[in-house]
Amino acid sequence: MSRRIAYQGIPGAFSHIAATAYFGNNHQFTGLPAFFDIFTQVEKAQFDYGVIPIENNLAGSVVENYDLLFAHNVTVIGEYYQPVRHNLLVIKQPQNKPTIELKHLKKVCSHPKALEQCTQFFRKHPHITPVVFNDTAEAAYHVASEKKKDTAAIASKEAAEMYGLDILAHHIQDNPNNWTRFLIITSIHREQDILAHDTMYKSSIMFTLPHKPGSLHTIIGIFANAHLNLSKIESRPIHGTTFEYIFCIDIEFHSHDYALIRDLIQQCTEMTNDIKVLGYYRKAHIKK
Amino acid sequence: MSRRIAYQGIPGAFSHIAATAYFGNNHQFTGLPAFFDIFTQVEKAQFDYGVIPIENNLAGSVVENYDLLFAHNVTVIGEYYQPVRHNLLVIKQPQNKPTIELKHLKKVCSHPKALEQCTQFFRKHPHITPVVFNDTAEAAYHVASEKKKDTAAIASKEAAEMYGLDILAHHIQDNPNNWTRFLIITSIHREQDILAHDTMYKSSIMFTLPHKPGSLHTIIGIFANAHLNLSKIESRPIHGTTFEYIFCIDIEFHSHDYALIRDLIQQCTEMTNDIKVLGYYRKAHIKK
Image 1 (spheres, rainbow over the protein chains, first blue to last red):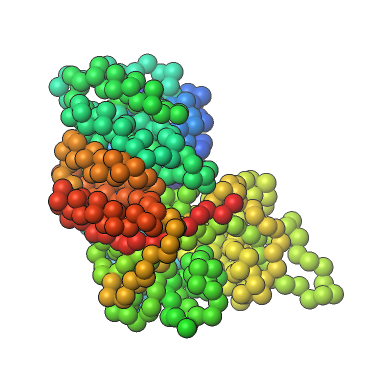
Image 2 (cartoon, rainbow over the protein chains, first blue to last red):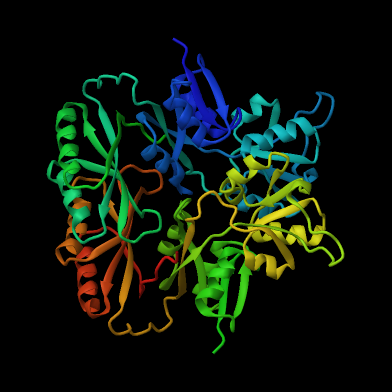
């Protein structure tokens, strides 16, 4: 059955690649301008699912999406780790023309983060000027539409295919270990899947605590005593106050412990100010 | 005594503003291209201090700087909370000419994050096109040097003064609560200050733990049992492995507990794989 899936950006953006990798190609994918649009439209069931980045191993957590998860009536039903590979894309040359060479490039366009993650490349080729764009896929689109031989884009290989560009150099980022974790969200009113048998799951919860010694220790103890692993923990002050903190925790559990984890989260409810269970979803793995 | 202080970016960047706010104006401030340069040059004592952003309440932690703190022989000796205020800067008009009006603007230049944080402004003025730059101060410099009446920059009021620009609109960001926390670093070989009497301090530590239930709970318990507050906690997997995690913790303590905190951190050393004490420094406050 074909689903309506929303992501942020334009076709070829890493969010789009993650969405198709997670769901497969036989669905209707729509790029929206902002994360906020995904949340409000998934909430109103204008889309069946939304795919949002939540953290990158080099750039950190996407705080904005945590805030949106806390504020909107959506549930997390899955996660996906998307490797980030930066390639150098140039316009295709006709068969009888020589291919474009690095030494002829003058400009390379991409998102500032992508440009920054390719610092070694720019040091090795000081004749090339980096040009900032809002998005890697937008940079690829720009190169494809301008058709200039001296301008390249740093983007994904999927963006190369989508916009009919050639890959002049593969994997030009400094750090080959670069991934973004995406969460799959749906309306809170949508019926939840039953947990698969004998499989590892995660639950993500967000809660606020008074800023006083020991309060976090008590919460973490609930899961430690049940021998459950925390795969992520993060805290930050709320609205600039130093009195209350918001925490995000991911707990790993085996599907046969589903009743247990629900019970433990219930125990947390009694000790926290505000708490939101973002969802229960199958644990994914980081691909090498 | 005048100090040599390094920050990332060009004059008028938020890092520069934070550096002068922390140290005062009577020092020699130098903008370097990358965070890496600050660490290597402070490490070699080519600068007395470095000022680096470590987290923004809307954008999250600067993971790159945590990695650099873990890898380099530097010590944190201070923190500073810099409010982030986005203003709309335009070229100054001669006194006999009318001031530039919003309706005549065609382009507004800034860093993508700053543009994104002013979404309401662009919705209200759909005739204006956002143009991405590497840095807010670079955008201000561009407007000042191009001298086009239809182009503005989103940057700080300090950038306006520095580049001789007028502020057409103040505080145009969507969320008035926007701050960046900076850390002040120095070479590990530099003599440390003695703690001031009767003052709140923080210590930042980073350590790795095997990814197994309870290990974090034990560490946090060391501080909870001593009734010490954690003002920040964060975790992430190392090098894409799911087997080992790196944690960053900020512990608040009163100066009279300096011996105690050193003893507690020593206890952590016995339970962690790798541990690094980033420093002991006076606690700063978020300005409203």
